[in-house]
Length: 273
Image 1 (cartoon, rainbow, N blue to C red):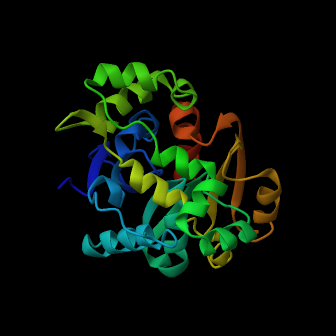
Image 2: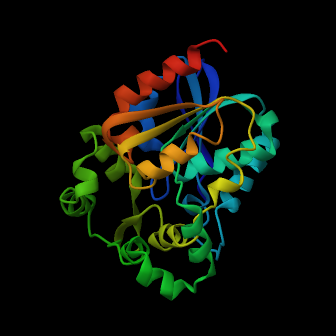
């Protein structure tokens, strides 16, 4: 079984915890982490990367509890932490339950769907969710087998999401996101897990007001997980937080503009207060 974490960044630096996005892996954040030169980063691998048995989940609490358990087992507390997408939501929820675990908190484009959407999606059977939310079916049918890594590179390189990535990040996806199996090469993050996660969104509204630490929350201008209307509503829930919208970028900010967002976050982490 794969290790549940990987160490990245400056091995003599200050400790920092990273929790990644659905369908990706920690190593893709290496160009982003390079901007955080003063930090030793423990990047926690989400469950699908080390437990291929897909579980039926009703929300993302399993990822929050994995995070809390990891911190407790490794005696981690008051650590600076960065989360992206699913990882950001898991951190946010953990912060509402265990504020002792974290110091400075950065959330990159956390998934915040309208509360009414989360409610009705949670009540539907999986097959109906697939019909209503196309992203679920797209994930479940995603191609996941290639003869060689080069074949995977040619196929994936034509897709819009990968075209927007920094070239180094795309290379890292081919290196770490495509792994050998008995038939050649497959996705490291199982498509079945990815689809299950899309089908079981977390109700972020339940805990976003229950935190007292100041959080840096970064929204992508072209985010597909936070609408402009939702963003304005989120900003009314906690006046203590710092809200920043990053222009000319989509949901995968650390993969599209790793230098720019890395520099921004480094400034926040190194600031006093």
